Image (cartoon, rainbow, N blue to C red; front, side, top):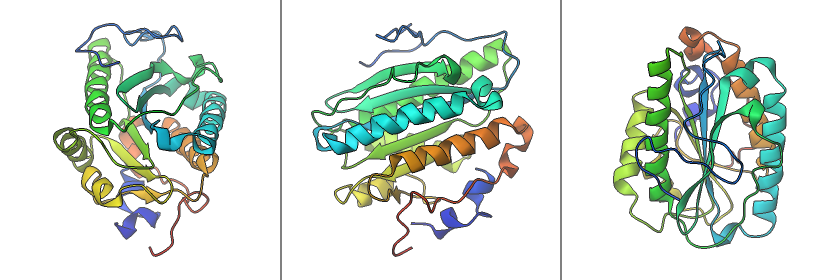
Length: 255
């Protein structure tokens, strides 16, 4: 794991049901993945959460994650700049990869609307492939509408390892991060996360980071603060935004 993740002057901090193509997808929350507010003058910051909802997350882990998601939506939507820029997508993976929430302005997401349940296996490869397609489609929509955008953020959280074919899609996502096209963060939950596989899935800088216990709220508070800073900057200046310390949520033992 690269030590530069923990350095405020690191490259990372300074640079830092499947569907096809552009088909419209609606879910029980009523959002549409082809919706785009073209009247909003703010640049957009797409954020994709890739969340492990396999059976090993049952109980307190999924409860803590749900509470943290609610907090994240509330606090991010209360910030003026972030509320206009951040567009949130939630993709879960268990027996399949599912879009729980299509890309939606954070200010339009009801605080308790995203409630996750844990069951089944760990279809991480399918989730990575779905995330890549979704991001490509969203960025294309921005370009076609003349909307500027920040580098997308992709957050992968898991307490295990993939049970499906993951190498090709993981390689594609990792290369996007290595080319500076996405900000890609991988979070390992608990002691059973497959660290070796996560190191292959993620770029070496910053590499996977282990969560302290179940400090989901502290992580998502850090994410909110990071997105506030990004949304308050010019798109051309986003590489110079310095993010806060991760010590409140990251397990730095042995680093």
